[in-house]
Amino acid sequence: MTQPDLTAEQWKRRALRAEGAVFHALWMHPLTYNNETASEMRGRFHQHIEATYPDLITRSSHQPIQVYARADACGCKEDGSVEYENAHNEPDDEDGYVCLRRPLGRVCEHCEDEDGDGPEWLPDGVLWPCPPIVALNACLTGTEETAR
Image (tube, rainbow, N blue to C red; front, side, top):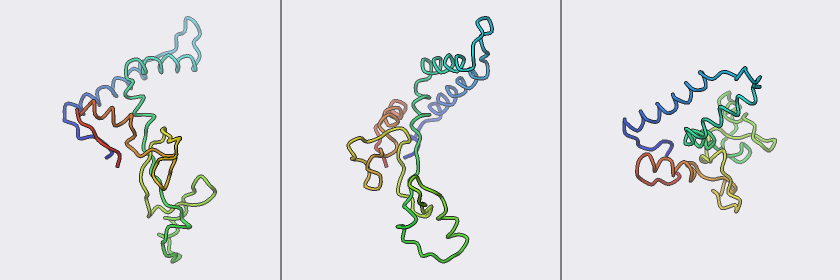
């Protein structure tokens, strides 16, 4: 499940909170009276967002990543066509390629399962939505959901 089933009012609240964060970012200027650097301004902005919109910080860091089967083990028949080549030329993290025709599932970009109890195709991954996103969604909807 990528998004919870929110009411129109819940979507509106979520959109207004994101709009408030963007407005604050556009409104900010460096503090010139003490020669604030870009790094210091970034820190001040991040501190404000963390204090005011912690849910947005969590949603931003816990994004889903689609995981695909390795191209050399996907089972597709190599026919030399352009479609085959396009589906099998995306590099992976281990000097190989993935098959875009064989999605295995989605995991959280941030979370890691240190015990190796994740899905069989990525034991150190955590299925998305991960526990922090499930908790945020439960706060919005008043229900519990599980990773799919």
